Length: 217
Picture (cartoon, rainbow, N blue to C red):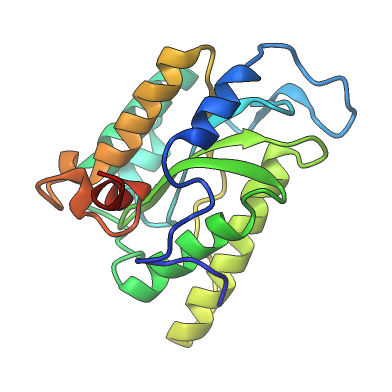
């Protein structure tokens, strides 16, 4: 089991890590051939560049109704908005319903912090995961997300005695252009369980850094 889980303070606890990321915030694309810059995969655009701060969302395989998945709009922004609304409703694909599954995902996110990226915020929901990271040189975004998915799918499926797909194929990413966007992303990510009516306050959700605010006050 990778390190992490409820009660374990992450390396990015508090806001010092976020403030350090703000100092390096840049819209300059990486010149490294390891990072792709702008590219498209399936119907989604992605932006991959070292030292970018990225809000990433990936979801479980059954998190969208099949009729919706077959009739997604062509516009990428419309797709993102529709999927975010459906995920926030939380009516489908509750593969991350138990503590072991959520701890496994949270542990995987924490494990890569400082090695492959700098973890700024996260929230493990029943059907999807929000992550805010600062990318590091030499670790392309798709590679990072693929590592999260492959490890967690293997561990969760093994614990349930099954095989097969666990996560939906692609992921969303949105790079942060300025400080305001970063703070709004953190607020959105940590407030997701409240919006989904899973808890009354963000600090009540045990699978995001918002739970640490109690200990920092």
